[in-house]
Amino acid sequence: MQTVTSVAALRDVIRQWRQAGQSVGFVPTMGNLHAGHIKLVSTARQRANRVVVSIFVNPAQFGPNEDFASYPRTEQQDQEKLIASGADLLFLPEVTEMYPQASQTQIAVGSLASLHCGASRPGHFDGVALVVCKLLNMVQPDVLLLGEKDFQQLTLIRQMVADLNIPVTIQGVATVREADGLAMSSRNAYLSPQQRQQAPRLYQALCAARDAIFAGNDDYRAVAQQQWQILQQAGFIVDYFSICRSADLLPAGTGDLDLLILAAAKLGATRLIDNLYFSKTRI
Ligand code: PAF
Image 1 (cartoon, protein in one colour):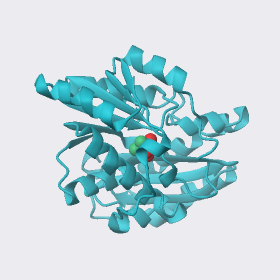
Image 2 (cartoon, protein in one colour):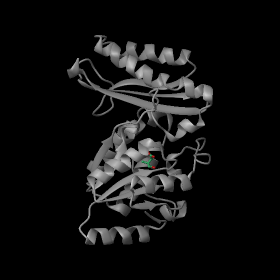
Image 3 (spheres, rainbow, N blue to C red):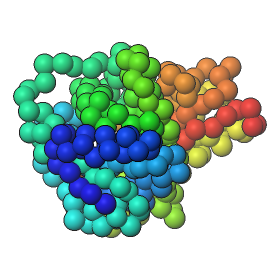
Image 4 (cartoon, protein in one colour):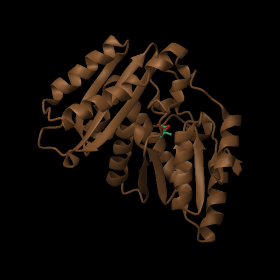
């Protein structure tokens, strides 16, 4: 695996692949790689001849009081994992390479960016859209692989790519979970041993809400409220717990068939997010 830190070097390598007629899959990450990222890489391997991974902790998507400075940076271990996973090229830029000057251009992806995580992290999705758009322009991949754990991010990037006619196919990849159901996340490393034991309750709450709907409870507000309370009693500070339409992430009505339950909650200072998709046609 080659590692490059400049956009010029990245483009040089990719140009040679293109000249040889090879397709490119791209996995953008912020590093601190876990099995969820590795599944993105292995899926990219199946979809394209060459796999590019970026590691860049993007300051533009962190709020002033968020964990940009303390976000786990584990480049050495990440590089070893990427070599083992069969990635071809790692793009590892400094902030000055990605943002040589303060960006005057913003990408605001409409109301999707202000729902759910966007409501409690103002500006977060503008920063995500900006960096992903820049990375797509740099790499120009055939396929972009994104995890379904960040379902709102995935939906928003799909929207941006459609709106801006960016020529890339997006493939969402299913969330990878620990044996006890906790969705894998770089931020799980912040949890104390006691919080780590509590953390799978978030996924359990999503499953309980889905099961209540499968059992015929169509009062989605009440279903969500009940799980919110259960989480609160277990020590979580719940940010949102919403039963939505999977297509646009707006509140679901009883006639909607493709549903997504999304939740975010804090355990201590650690903010966990998770979601569960299901189709009512299977009831
Ligand atoms: O999901 C992430 O890790 C980040 O939001 C992304 C897509 C790499 C953009 O910085």
